Each structure stands twice: as C-alpha cells, then as structure tokens.
Image 1 (cartoon, rainbow, N blue to C red):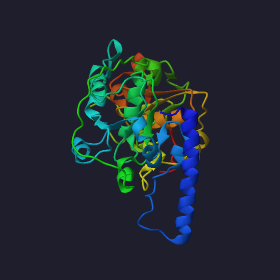
Image 2: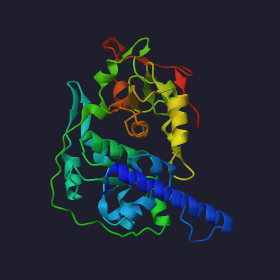
Image 3: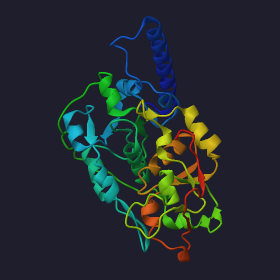
Length: 333
C-alpha cells in the first residue's frame, strides 16, 4: 500500500477529477452512469484515516477489509476479500473496568483478525452499510489493540460501493491460518481512574465530550439498570449524529467538522480530550473525528456511562444531573 503522503496526494487528484466529472455532469445533465453521491467525499480527500469508494477501487488489492455489518448482509453481498468483524466480539470480549482497574483480554479479537489473514502491520479498511458508529468503534478497537498499520474508514460504506457498481461477492471467505500479535495501547483509552483524575466537584481539567443525546446527558432519558443518571461533571454534550451527514451516509465535510468541534465546542488540538457515551460505541465517532482533525491525545472512555453510572461521588466520581445543566453544542442538531 502507498504511504500516507502519497495516498493523500492521490486522493487530492481523485477528488479533483471527481469534481470535474460532477461539474461536467451538471452541465450535460445527470445520467444513469454517474457515480452515486459519496463515491468521492471531502473527508476522504482531507483525512489520512478516511477513504472513499473511488480510492478503494484503485487500491483494492493493497488493503485488508473488515465488514462490520450484520452477518446476513455480509453473506448476501460483500466487497471481495472482506472478512466479517462481529460487533459482539468488539463489545463483549476485549476490555472491561473492574474493581482492580482496567483489564484487557484481546484474544477473541486477535483470533478473528488472524482468521482474516491480518497482521499487526497491515493496512486495513473498515466498512459498514454507511458511515456510522460501528465502523469507528472497530477502528478504535484495532488502535486499542496496538495495530501498527493504517486503519481507515470507507466513507459512505458498502451502500455507496454497491451503488457505484463496485465488485461484490457472496458467502463467507475461507479462513486464513495466521497469527495476530496484539499489544494493547492504553494511550487511546480513558480508564475510569484517568477520568476521575481530571474531574472534581467544580468541573473538568480537560475537555470531556459526552456523545449521547441531550436528554441522556441531562439524566432525563434513563438507560440501563444504573444507580444514577446525568453526565460527568464538566463534560460538554455533543451528540455523535452531528458529525455524520445522514442524507449521504458519510462523514460531514472537514470544514463542517472543524466548525462543530473546534469553533463551536471550543476544542484545541494540543489538549488531551476524552469522549464517552453509554458504552463507548457512539463515543468512538468523536474519538475518530478528533484524531482525524489532528488531536495529539484523544481517548475513548471504554466504560462510559454504563460504568460511571454505577460509581459514587464519595469515591471521587463526580456527576451532574438535571435538565438544562451543563453545556450542549447543537450546531447540526
């Protein structure tokens, strides 16, 4: 696979070519042969960790592919070479907060990656139906396992690939005989103790982003069998859906993302930032976007509110509850 600088240059060329094609089509009138919206995307042209369907067409033989859709959809039609990456393994097997601290057991995920023929230094593209939360959670998970190759998001996902007449195949691929060496990288993980060390009863010492809905943030929408509802004291609410262009099924443009995260949320790339939600899945969207925007130290609170909501202020785990408390950023709400 090409290095990042070469790849970024190629993306710029492809994006320029795509824009020229789109402009010509606009003059001549749309035809059935026009590529679908999101076949080329602004995020793919700008970010190292995002590719679009046009780029994947050019580089399909140079990357490994992980499909995070439901198994039925995967078996019905998938990109050639893709292996299924079940979300149950991402959720249930590799990390948890315990009374003795953060513990990681990546064996099940490592086994799945080995069966896909993936080694730690390989470049990987992750796709789902569109661009959404399971895709970014898979990318975060591989980074937390210490994956050394580039792990990228297919912006627009399988829906755009298929609509653009990308090659597809059916059925399950043959398992590979390999070995995946995972070395957990806690530098992308915020543990409960890391978070507690940056929060007191008066607020937070670092930016903490709550990626849930405002109602969950305020404690009005109570989810799960927990002891308390609300948000980490000092956290800012920024619902994860604001980073996604739902109509096109892709990430918002880099300009929109900078407006949302840097201008309106007031974040700076030289700060350590932590994202959380209910189970770290929605928060992975924030983690991914901030990483692509060039933040040096961005972390996902793996336990998220499913963990924090079981704790006590008496032990230093501060929270705030009540409608209209805290700060809500609703630029694209």
